[in-house]
Length: 245
Image (tube, rainbow, N blue to C red):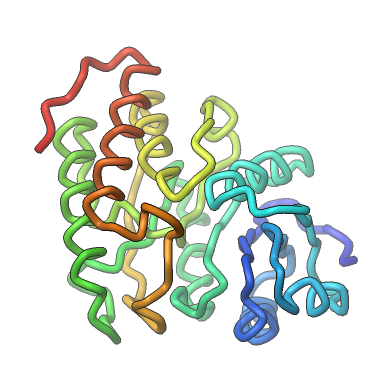
């Protein structure tokens, strides 16, 4: 296992059955950042074997699949426990371009915000693919909810390629362990008045048929679930119930 030295920035990558992409992604991110955490969320393919052979990353393994949100919450705890100032998160499905890690590092150096969130829908974003229509529609709806209710100015609510200042994260309370985690994240960020800025990232969809699992593969059920999580997160911080459509 690698030794963590420079404690300013940690990159965390959630992994669940990513044997096809894992080695290539880790090789590439290592060109841009030295401290890398991989959270293996109960993979049942060869991901565990690939990770066992790496000495350039730290690995946390779950015995069973716990959910996307759980991996991000654990990454926050790991970064805080190790004394990092910033945490960058990115996916391992080649839909986040490792070559854009320096863009986040540069934004961190500006030291003018608490959350640096990637957006695939800014004018400067390079769009290499077209997103599945249901995902784009749901993203637009949820982004509108967040902007109208929380008075933010986001263009992409669901991009997992982002950087967070750990001092700001320490004030937040997260309980959502699934794919709806971003809804709770944005409510907590707005409630604690953290400073947010977006930077453009490439829009890449290598596999438009990836599943959310179970009923969430149904777009209508997924959107209803997101609304429920959003409403609950608002109530938790004392915001009045939103009138959302």
